[in-house]
Image (cartoon, rainbow, N blue to C red; front, side, top):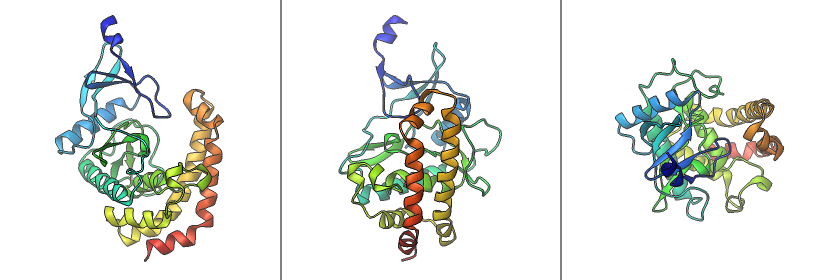
Length: 261
């Protein structure tokens, strides 16, 4: 056991999960209530031939889940914020959603609910931040950290992804590489690449607003439990959500114009 611990390399980047380490070609993560559901999903994706996700190895002697290590890099770079990268993320998300078809939408314990008033239709990742998209050779190759995956709609997962990659946020809260981008044009580009039908594009802005409202309430509630949620809240997560919502209201007409060009 001691020899194993000496080879643990801490992995950082996410906001919520502590204690994630790499050991050789595997990643060890603390188990959660949703771990059995996530493992079932990852095994389903493997069976469906979807290459853009870790594989389940099992559990270790410390009760941690063991997943395969997915090589590559995460985070924002000059290349990862290009329109070409955005199109590739949309295409990878579409392949992921299609690969979840046939996976049971009931019978598992997940983290959180759908956040869309429509009935769930697929399993969404629901947390595709720049820290959870693996790039290889300057192209998005895989998604990691499925802790917040759950039954939802395609459009909700798209909105959640665009929150970070368009991005739908007040410029003051955007990464410097994202501040000068044309958000409306990027939303349209993503929707075109994914193949979002017209009837769903009509729901995109209202659903984004609904997501902000729900996210604010959920984060405020979880912050009361302490831990990383409380730290994020104390660091201004709630204010950032409110600013993003206000920015969305102020630019709604412009964004809709792009969606319907």
